[in-house]
Image 1 (cartoon, rainbow, N blue to C red):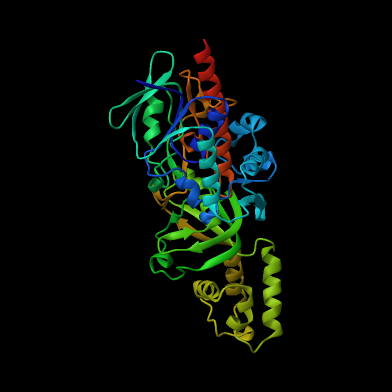
Image 2 (image 1 turned 60 degrees about the vertical axis):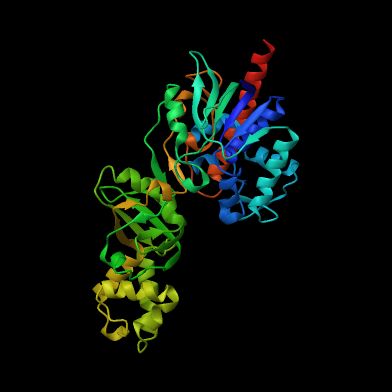
Length: 424
């Protein structure tokens, strides 16, 4: 039977990082992936440019990982976002900082990140098997001790790192295989749900595609609880679709929609088109512009304030004729229109499915993982990293930071553990 010090299952960001870290310890490593090539998720991340990490302070990064981000404080004390930047620069991948601290390769090509990682694997003589499924992970009473491949081959190991991702973006190989292996070792899998995912609505204007394809810039989008109070607000762009709402603000709010839908049948999302101005001030400013151009139609005066389709939509909702002028305008109806500019609510009834989400919520319970080592508290020699863990963040380099940090620690500790075993 073949033996490796460390077997890493999964060739995504965390698996690649784990295999390199274990190899740098001097461990004999096998990296195995069921896909035809490694790094498929990395190659498509950041719109094909690969947002490798984020340069915000650690506290800020953790704030952007609402799903158990605090668990990562210990990990960041060992290896953090600045270490990720140094790691890639040592591999010859120069990075540049863009808006909101996002770090991209200077080449603007995700493939340059993938290639650097693959080159490092070669330098460390890591054995790589692609197009090879893992049927199960083998455990004895104390520890993880190997794997069985899809073809029935048993491969022994000093330690096993499970880095197979969650259930989102399944075409990259994340199909949830690892949950069963984790449960077999005695781990709890918390409820899985889609995050960073578009939301659905059966509002008449959505069904009629009235606003389909319309983007709103820099709006404040709030998820409201049963009492109508905001649970979370994100100020970013959004877009109306044929099934509901999407865009950065919606993706960030989606996990809170999922949680609220457990408490109420429909959840209201409030759109504030002018988050930096109070309603009364907005009313006065618009009112003055209309008063100063009494012969102009409302539509022409207010066009500079917002996209025409949205303007016409809100006017119609409030029974205001766009060709009306200031002299015939009902003040009450105009007040209601201004209120809609600040507080237009959309009822949403769900999200797209987990396989359409960017990120999986839920996973292997972090209560059962050593936060400094990414080691299982249930079985020796078993390590977890990346999206299989119950850790999820917003898009913008936060999930990949979590994957790279947890991957690094899992690999370092799996390597150290196996080498110590070998020397016994």
